[in-house]
Image (tube, rainbow, N blue to C red; front, side):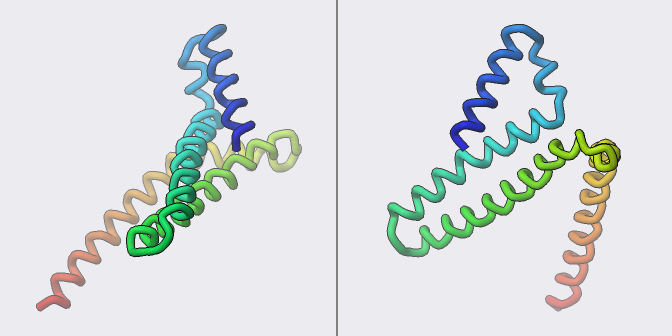
Length: 129
């Protein structure tokens, strides 16, 4: 984690020195790395807090937050491995298609969330009578 964070900081510093800032932030993989590192720092702090505080209800909540953060990091790391598939001739096309598909999947998830939330509110109203 430390080497990856150092490498990302070096890449960020060298890009800002020789190129414009928009070049660094226009890359999908750089944004994914920043999101990953933004989650790894709280992950370290949550693990440190659960180890030092002992036991109790607060530690249980922190432990749940720790595992949720690990799940988010695992999802981002799985997406990050797609960058390694570019050199493979048959799988590079899959990565390009996946990158073009991401905005559509995002809006589908937003619509699905709104529909599920609407039905959830309706069923809650019906069942609470």
